[in-house]
Amino acid sequence: VVGRCVGCKLLKHVLTTELNKGEIVGILRRAKGLMDGGSKRPLDLAGKVGVLLFDQPSTRTVASFYRAMKYLNMKALNLPLGSTSVEKGETLEATLQTLDELEYDVAVVRAVDNISTVGLNSLHVVNAGGMGYHPTQALADALTINARYNSLEEVTVNFRGDVQRSRVAQSTRALLEMFGVTTIENGPLDAAPVAYQIRQQNDQGRIMSDSDYKVAYGITDALVLQTPGLKAVMHAGPVIEGIDIDRKTLGSNLSLVKMQVRAGLFVRIALLEYLLMGEV
Ligand code: CP
Image (cartoon, rainbow, N blue to C red; front, side, top):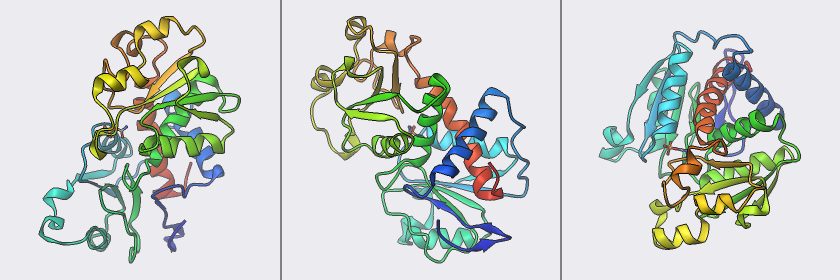
């Protein structure tokens, strides 16, 4: 938790692991209610403005934050960092200070550089998958497991693949473990009922060829047939189909991948409500 009270709302940034257990419970409860229609509609945040600042590729995160802002009746500006004055040498820190001065309410940032929140007065900042962390993906994954198992306790999740270099694995494991989920790393496919597949982090350099990666970690349709104890397959996306997970398994009832995408929308709505209005 950083910052000061702005209009009696605490200025908060979610960059790594700032959310405490109570806050996460509240956000997940609200997101679940929104997802299954059990709780009231998203708040009306007309007048609030968000900005999406990405300098790395994204489909799910950028599109779901944009959609979340629309659900909340916010205005949303998509401002790829490559089109900003960062290209003329301005720092990301100065860029965020400029947006703060211009009365933006929240900045969602995926950047190669570390995010600095120095000097911000009323702009909330959310890390959208940089600095080795992906906190909103972790929330989406927790919501997905909770929706499938009705609990986060007594679940064991086997993270498989290029786990050590993955921001998703880093954030999701930490959050799940906070709630009593047992996690293991690169166990055989029959080691746990939930397999969480991680793609090779090619953006950080290849550790092996795609075909070797498939042999080492891939969830093939044949392997699934030999693993009756496997109850769920997760992947934050983008899935490298046929390497990470075979097509039939990806489209089967075992796959929680689509649910993870959908959960991502509702946790982001709930997080924005919490940051901007203090409500979950
Ligand atoms: N899971 C995830 O962060 O996907 P994108 O890179 O498409 O946003």
